[in-house]
Image (cartoon, rainbow, N blue to C red; front, top):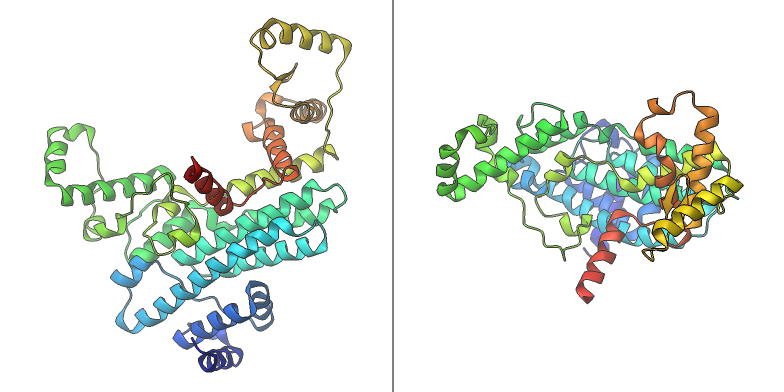
Length: 393
């Protein structure tokens, strides 16, 4: 796109103050992309929040090819190009989230990523929710780093943490977005198992269409197969056509953008970085600090020594053994002891606690340890690192 076209697109976008009043058209979407590419994610979000610009509906590439009306296809294609540009820009944002020192700048960047996630997910589009997930994944890195710093106000970090469980993570949202993208009701239940069964049925029926022998084999063992075979599934088998992904392939948003990956929504949009960041925030809020050394009574030390000599030293296993269990480090043991001491004092019946609460110390320690070692990474950065390491082997 040359500078003259950039200027025209920006003029159209800047004059479009009533963006929420109508569905964004192709020129509006192109203007939004021009703003993004010239000013960057942060400046674009400043303008979005100031002017109330609407996010376009971003379908999958499959939707553009199979569902989009002729009069809508150009706008849908432009929206996908905008989403692709945004996904690529977020790669550099991931580096920023690792490099910014803990403080107000990191806080503001994290806050802006939360706003970006909210903006993207304000429309039920396949691409919208994947971008929302990516933005929130990056925001979780900021939350973890802020929480792990004793000097940063916990209340400000917890305000960000509270934004980490949006409604679009629910099965209801996933079903709605998938059906929107399919242009018909393929999924009839928000139950995760049922959604996975529906998707698995579609994949099997597609495989049988390509290889009739598979159908013959299924008929021979009909009792073992209970596929869902609705007219909507059968009429849209290509919806279930996903590429085989090798272990060397980095499962990043940029790499997957033009691939058919509806299964991501079927499997659920929970984000592991969020789970770890929230556990760390909860731990710091309840304990008040991050213990790095565990103190034990004389009898406890005797038991530790007994266990250690009896098994771990015998087998030359380097572990820290405590009454709470065995750990890879004294810091991990300290987290476990502090948490169990806290639960005993604050909880009437430990047996009634859900597992994630009872064992929260393990998740909190993982987050804390990763932050301190510079290894608390967003999903895509982790995937890229793993892919690079695999390539070297």
